[in-house]
Image 1 (cartoon, rainbow, N blue to C red):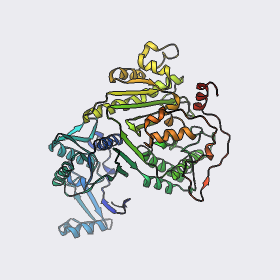
Image 2: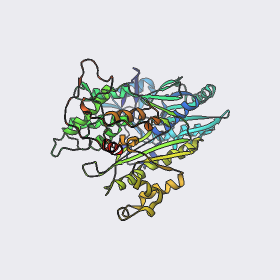
Image 3: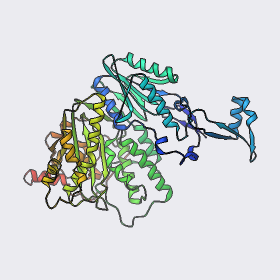
Image 4: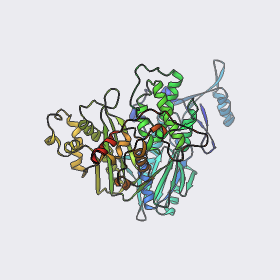
Length: 534
């Protein structure tokens, strides 16, 4: 089949694809699965490029798969007008045309890895990675789509996602030479240079303060436009306090709206991991509802889109004070889901903005908040280990590794293991003491974090008001992480539905004014107790 699509730049792109569905089941996963660069590796590569002032180029290999030879015997069938086009290109094919069920039909053998075939992605990966290795690059074993080489005493990094490449080095001449070598092998590429780029749907801008900004406004506009109802007002937060609550007996969505619900949530999931960390909690909950969404889930999705409508211009800004100092926050909300399972949240930062944000429902039921915190630490600490190993392969060492939590009992269990376990925690599965083992081997320093400074709360609780705005500014890199340690905001009585982000309402917009009574949050109660009950 032929696929024609208009890109966000306005350019029309066409591609002929094979129907590889008939090949499924004939190959093992190992014979067809191809690596692609992870979003986390991309963010780290961008931050390092910004910190070191590297020259960055984005290069797109044209017709990438067609450079790889098809290893197996694969036949493809053409019918109808496509046969006429093939014969016009190569008249010698006319003698092989047959009539099947009244249609001109042509059978051919594929010599190249055509888009759509199940092996094509892996064949292209093997060819491109081998080419880089022959050029003197070494693959990072913790992300096989990141390769490095030392050129003129400085590191050159190539990160690729299928046929899109990000190339960086402090010397622009080195970047130019790498582009030329790749073009010598695969032909002329589409290349962008400078401080502004587009890569995998992200608009990337390197700023003068050694940071990088990531914007995915067009994706968000697409999600809002796809929604079957008009989004006419702005919301102050992505979700109300009842995010985790379900209405018993709520009417289920019809098939059309259920599929639309699934599609929009999937689109937002892609965006929230790359540019909009502030919507991860709402998206994480909605992901648990895609299999059987109801009217209340539809309303929660609409609320999220109302929030995005008013914050379309928000971007993620990432920067490093130093690649040697990493801070991590992990938290868990106990038994907040309808099935009484807890929710884990976590993130890490090198100074400006957060990366590797996590917001996920725990897989098991826990008996206490302490146990939920221990499970949450075990859920997240693997991210921390991967980041350390990835950076070491990139040539960087983390010397200060701080792990913030706000539950003292959980901290003791993670530091001391079974020695701090009593009758209320002896049942905890030993696999969740993985965190204790990694604390010992990774040089992790577990530090108590006051609740009002616990950044991971953003990923476990639908925060509102001043605390939401404070944490959001830190998450998106609009404020440095040091602002968390400033004087705690005094609790105020706010109605979430009446509170709008400054500057989000447009002329003629209708504000959210549900006017329902508001209960004090846990953070506010804790703050009052800390201040002597005031």
